[in-house]
Amino acid sequence: MPRIAYVNGQYVAHTDAMVHIEDRGYQFADGVYEVCEVRHGLIVDLTRHLDRLNRSLGELRIAWPMSRAALTQVIRQTLRRNHVRNGLFYLQVTRGVARRDHVFPKEGTPSSIVVTAKSTDPTIVAKKNASGIKAITVRDNRWDRVDIKTVGLLPNALARQQAKEAGAQEAIYIDHNGMVKEGAATNVWIVDADGILVTRPAEHGILRGITRTTLIDVAGKLDLPVAERYFSVEEMMSAREVFITAATSICFPVVSIDGQTIANGHPGSVSQKIREAFFDVAEKTVI
Ligand code: PDD
Image (cartoon, rainbow, N blue to C red; front, side, top):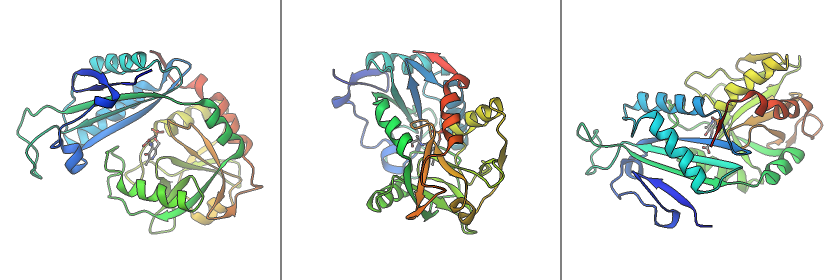
């Protein structure tokens, strides 16, 4: 079945989907994006993803490419046209097309919008959950505004590649004080010595993940204590559990970091409980 993409007002074959060479996303990474999960034909946490898109656009003063209601319809239509029941949609908004110049293009230049959708195989995620994943730690070398979900992901791509070459699946960023930040494309959590779920506070040092926010709701429903506080690499290494969260994976257990085994080397029970309860608690929107 041919994939369909939405590009600036048109649904086109994925293979023919193109943006202009002077799109500012291409030349300056001057754009923002969202990735949102679809499970059993339901979009997970759409409201929160669109709220974050609104924040990212606002922080960079990029105009919405269309109304929020219209964008919701485009997302649903793109998912329908690609027959996605389990998978994700990706959307990207850039400051538009203009002759290359660092300063913003003239007022009224339309933003560019691309929406794609793809199916994923839930059994691959299930396998990773059963075995757990490996991670490495890396020094954070990104800009200061990683709270904005921009398409400027070169450091993240390099960190993921470094992880891959080390036989791992995620790279965990560490700040100058030896405190854990987040993964290259995930938020990081531990279950500490007191059984408390701990994640770094979401000020500008990390992205405020939607999965992270919903997970706090899930923990509340399950009566699991949560603390948003800083934690060190040493504390992570000796934690009862370590796991990472993102819309594409919900909650993967981490069983080894920098070659060192975490806890008993098997996925922990807390992350499993959370994963099982996640979809009941998350907002679901019919495609
Ligand atoms: N990444 N931190 C970073 C740096 C991320 O790129 C992501 C998501 C997250 C988790 O956010 P959320 O729970 O909203 O997915 C945290 C997406 C999935 C990606 O780039 O593919």
